[in-house]
Amino acid sequence: MPRTLSEAESKACLAAHGVPVLPERLCATPDDAVAAAEELGYPVVAKLCGEAVAHKTERGLVRLRLTNADAVREATGALLAAGRPEDGVTGVLVAPMVSGNRELIAGLHRDPQFGMTVMLGVGGVLAEALGDVAFRLVPITAVDAEELIDDLATQSLLGEFRGEPAVDRAALVGVLTALSDAAVADPTIVSADVNPLIVVDGRPVAVDGLIEVEA
Image (cartoon, rainbow, N blue to C red):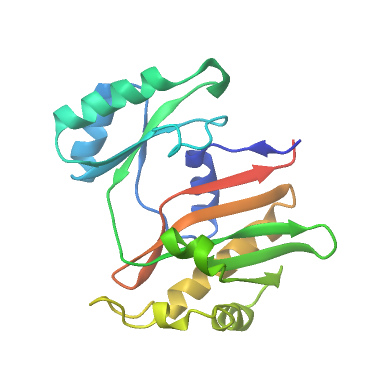
């Protein structure tokens, strides 16, 4: 059975290959979380983090838009208390709160017939309704990544949108080639899920990510 890395470990791995992530701190206590929030700047998001922690949103393990020390302290205490024995060792991940009108999904998927692929799709509330995803076999070049972006049917989301600039295609190409590089560098990777990949001022940022590796 594959082993899932924690969100913090997963994003550190992705960042090492060039996927843009937010600065974040893994905290063991409410006081640690407050110090992290003061360093990173409010508002922040706090999430329970651990190798066995899955379905964070469904379990209420994500706290958004925390704007002061009291809110961070309360949220961190509640998140740590919500951990279950099967979650293993946990901490609270504190990161700046960002938002955008567009969410993408990206990742790695090992096809049983063809091998590892890079995936890009429309994320957020539109993901299931549109089912707009595209794939390319690893390894990919920048040209392959451009073609992968062009394969999305919902091209209007990539242009200027609700007062926001067009998606920086070069930056998005960089995300896709970085995922490919990670798969090539570490053949034990079974899958990677970057969801959401939020477009902030035109540039994609990995706000959440999970990697599965061979046990």
